[in-house]
Image (cartoon, rainbow, N blue to C red; front, side, top):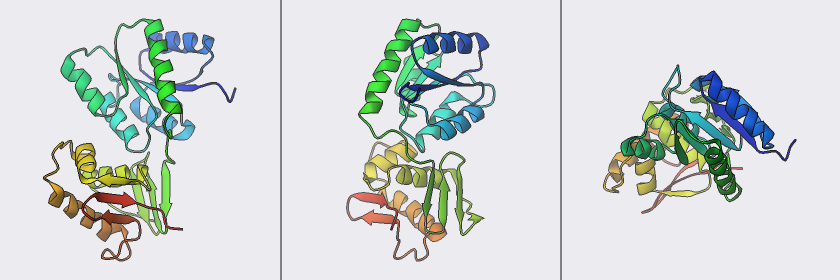
Length: 231
């Protein structure tokens, strides 16, 4: 059982869930299903699947939001299913972090092929990061979007959290100004570095003991920033 790839399917259509579940189990996969975005996010954090199959038309939130929230803390491959088939729709989904896109109705063989590709990509990557990161008195729960310091919740704006989550999910890596601006704000240009510096200063004031001498939100001069977890 432990060697079976685990697939999380997030879709509110019962017939789709039944069909996908039955076929994937027959093909040797372990399957977990969710019918809402919140349930899917909770199961993703709890079970850390190998691949997520995500429908965009969920009853409680747009699948794009689910995709973005997953990408805040994990690189698990995401295959999106949707009736939306315009080039702009596909571009938007992929820009939000999805790995692949299938338009409904789709063939099961095509879905199986996309899953195999996703699993190959997974084997070449580090997979998911721990959804809860602790640095001294600071705890960052990437899946629940909650940050605490000394047991007290720290109020962050959506942009501040997105910035912190992107840094923390890539702990140890130097992230360039351009990559951060593109990931958090969607800006491909690198001429908004001062804007980024302001947000980093705000995060340090809220989270670091001494914002002038940060311990984990570090600056890489002329390059970008790096999140580290001190011993």
